[in-house]
Amino acid sequence: MAKYISQYFLLGLLCIALVLASAGPTPSLSNDPHIDQTDRPCIAAYHCSENGNCDKLCREIGYKGGDCNPGYCCCDV
View (cartoon, rainbow, N blue to C red):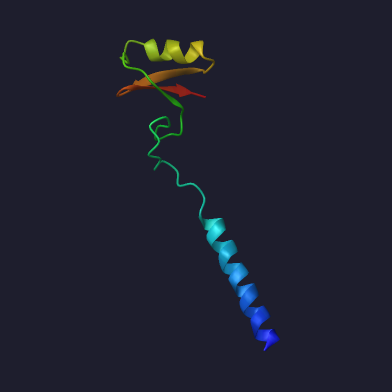
């Protein structure tokens, strides 16, 4: 009987390990408004426009640059 209990215990551990291994983050399906679909950090900006103010804002806070998505400046890391 102990043999079967240990086999089921090991099978249970294997199942848990498989579930944990497959439960990684799903790319490009984030509902976080501070991350865009390419996983770039985004900053809420009410005056976001296509005239380059997002690029300037991102450069001022230490990123390589950025562009405007509707309502958010998304910065290049």
